[in-house]
Structures are given as structure tokens and as C-alpha cells.
Amino acid sequence: MPERRRIPSLPDRLPDRLTALRTPADPGFWRSPVRGARFTAVLGLVLLAGLTLLFVTGLLSYAAYNPDLDPVNDKTPDKGWLGFYLFAWPTGPHWLYRLTQGLHVTVGIVLVPVLLAKLWSVIPRLFALPPARSVGHALERISLLLLVGGALFEFLTGLLNIQLDYLFPGSFYTLHFYGAWVFLAGFVAHVALKLPQAVRVLRSGIPRGEPDPLAAPDPLPATLSRRGALAMVGAGSLLLLVTSAGRSFDGPLRRIALLTPRGGTEQGPGPNAFQVNKTAAAVRIAPADTGERWRLKVRGPAGELRFSRAELLAMEQHSAALPIACVEGWSTSDQLWRGVRLSDLAALAGYPDSPPDVFVESLQRSGSFRKAALRDNQVRDGRSMLALEVNGAPLSPDHGYPARIIVPAAPGVLNTKWVETLTFGEL
Image 1 (cartoon, rainbow, N blue to C red):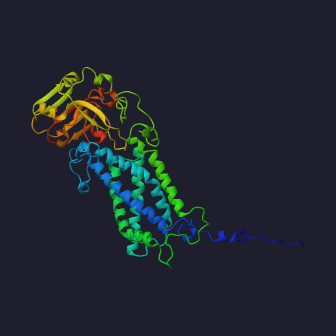
Image 2 (image 1 turned 90 degrees about the vertical axis):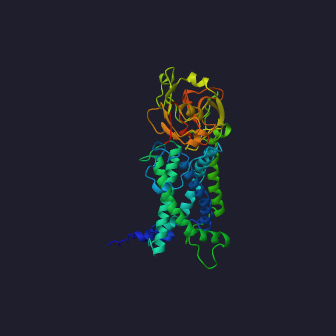
Image 3 (image 1 turned 180 degrees about the vertical axis):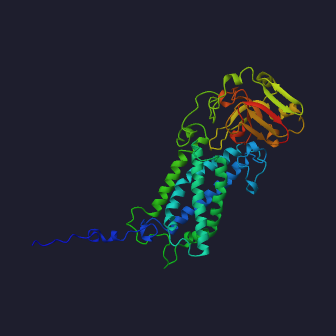
């Protein structure tokens, strides 16, 4: 009889290193030689500075809307004590909101590679078992969950808003606002737990004889040093800075801001050739709405007054050089606006000495911020006006013809276009 040949079993046919399948919970699953406590500490300190700046400028952005003035300005009406920091937003310096919101969005974009690298560097710890070894360790894991989840949520919603992709289930303002506070809870707890350790590692390194808690126990051969990895993260952030920050400037810098909707293109020649958010066509403002029949309604103790554009042009005109700055982070340089001061219109409405708040309504019939409220300090500022011209020419339809609001340091959405009614009085 022919001799039987033994068929090799599966373990005989596989290399020894594959016989024991590893899961992400096994430290040996993670083999990159780049991971290490010092590498993570450097990224962590960069994020500590950057995320703190993001949170502060985010709060300032929300305060700039004067959400406690009137419900039309407030997109988070149930904020409760989370609105403890709200204050009357100032009108000076006139570039204040352009600076704070430009920093908020630009820093957020630039930190994306740093955040991703930081998450990559600590991802083995996210799979570590058991989930909690003690009460203190459980609190640390919970804070990490809030930190990672909150950070990813805030960055994702922020980037989608910049790109005008409103894919979230609800208002961006509400989601981003509450997400920021969830993130802050995890951020503060994580910093309190980890900052002393990070500073110690950067100053003295890992003590001799102690293992690096983030280094791979069985690393692959190195193809990139940790310094090289940090350089790659920095280069990614620099690339994002160059291709996005220019949306806050005019000229060549805007042309290379290719990653943002308000960059990369010019608006054409002429006095009205600067960025807009909503066009007249997009909000269905027809020429008949802004033609000869248009009248500005001004309401107050003196009753309701109506003014044609020609009558407004016959009033005393004032000029101010002010930018337009949007929550999406883009802005224009100073444009020379000319029109009637809001304080003068308040005097006609029956407030000659102390201009009050004003409620502004647009011809726009749908969409956010077709109505807006301005605080008395904004009305009193001599640069706040009902603009009729810009850069020596009448407003274009897209810039708010026949009349628009312009207020120093205010978010762009509060500079209402296609104004129909101004109601002066305490709100």
C-alpha cells in the first residue's frame, strides 16, 4: 500500500508570529517606534495653548452676538448659567471681531494635524484593559472620553460650518455651543491629571529604569524619527495655514486660500468688489423690492416715519472705514461706508439725547438673522450707520442695496442688508 502523506496543519503552515492573533487591547498590537511619552507631551502642550485660545475666542464670538439682548440674536435660548460670561459687546477697536473670529477659525484649522497626531499617539491607551483599575483611573477614562469625543465633534462641526456644509441635525450655533462645554469638562480634567506628568517628561525625560508608558514594547524598525514626525505634523499645519488664513485678507493671500469658500477667487473690479455671504438672488430679493417703491420705516416714540432712499441721501451723511467679518472666519479689509448715523435716525424716532437699542428687520423673508437687535452702545457709536454707499458708489444688490446696517466690531450677520424697518426702544 502507498504510504500516506501527512497534510501540514494550519499552525505548521503559518509563521510563528501569526499563530497568536493580537487585538488592539494587546500592547504588542501597536508597533510604531515613533510613539512615546515625550512625543505625546510635545503635542499635548501645543494643544493646551491652541485649544485654550479656541475656547476663549469661541466664547467671545458668542458674546459678540449680544444673545442676551433679544431672542432673535440668541440661538441657544436654554443656555442658563452657561451664559455667565456674557457682556455688552464693545464697538472698539473696530477690527475686534475680525481678529477674534479670524483667530478662532484659523487656529482651529491649523490644529487639525496636531489633534490627529495626538490621538494617534495615545490610541493604544484607549483600548487598554481593564477599562478601569480604580476609581481614579475610571475618572481619567471618562475625562478622556469627553475630551476625545468633544474635540472631534467641535472640530468636525466647525470645519463643516466653514465649508458651508450644514450636515448636522440642528442649528450649528446650538450644537457647537453645547459641544464646547462638554469638551471643556474633559479638557480641564485631563489637563489637571496629565499636565504635571507632561512637564516632567519634557524637563527630565523618563526616569532611568522606568519603561516609557507610551512606547511600543515590540517596535518595528524605525523609518522616521520622532523629530521627523513632529516636523511632518508642523508642515501639515503650515500648509493649512497658508491655504486658509488668506480668507481674512484681500489681494494675493486670498487667492491662495484654496481650502475655504471665501478664498481663492476675486470678486471682480469696482467699488463693490469684496466678499459677500448671501447674495440678493439667494434670498430672493427682487428688483421690485428695492426699487422706487421702497421706503425705510423708522419707529419710535415719534410714531412711524417713512423715508425714500433719496430722502435718506438728503440727510447729513457720514463716513467710516469698517470691515465685514463673518462667523465662518472670513473677513474683508476696511471698506469706506457712507450713510446716515443710527443715532441721527434714533433722534428722528424720538430719542434725541440717549439713543436706545434698535430692532432691525430686513426685506429678506426667510433664513437666519433676517431680523437682528443692536445694543444701545452700538447705536451711539458715531461709526454705526445705515449705509447707502460703499467706496464712493451706491451699494450693489448683493451688498444690501438700497440700505444696510454697518456697525464697528459686530459679526457680519448683525450688519443687516436690505433694511426695511428700524424700531428704536429698549428691548
